[in-house]
Image: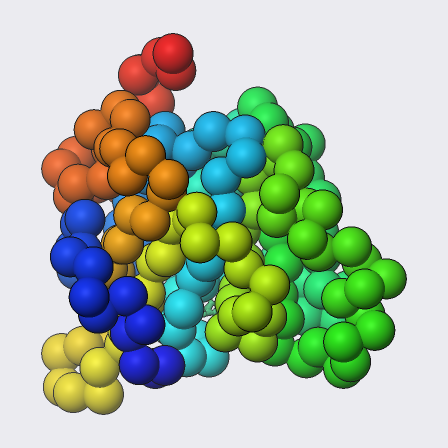
Length: 180
Ligand SMILES: Nc1ncnc2c1ncn2[C@@H]1O[C@H](COP(=O)(O)OP(=O)(O)OP(=O)(O)O)[C@@H](O)[C@H]1O
Ligand SMILES: [Mg+2]
């Protein structure tokens, strides 16, 4: 995994997921913190669970469309409670693609941007964002576990609905909280 760039910022929340389902439940829970204009950068190796977590977040945001890594298209647009833009820059071929896509307009726009492989576009990312680091460990017993560490670098640095933490992350979690 890429060295944690936010090392000087304290993590806002840490959670160890024990299964794919728990990661999805965590994403659903965490989605209640997100509002239009938020940018979330997902750091982690291949297979660390970025898309899985994004699937949970999108479920929480009431996205009905299929959520898959936009590896070749660079961007998927979903229509949930808010507009959601899902990026995957793993196979970014050229800076030209970024220009054609107008990424900065998305990053500074009114949708929610969820970005896989954000390190590829590091210089274009806004400071005002949330960073989520996912980590798998190659140790016995860790096959289905993932560490999830969240750094909140949003401008106001506020946790809005108290959904950064790891409480109530069982897979049967129901959405009950109302957004303000
Ligand atoms: N606790 C867990 N959380 C998330 N995924 C898990 C967990 N345990 C096992 N897995 C498996 O790990 C894989 C994660 O794949 P996923 O596509 O989400 O990774 P990714 O980080 O998006 O990879 P890529 O960089 O290739 O896009 C899936 O096959 C999933 O079933
Ligand atoms: Mg992915």
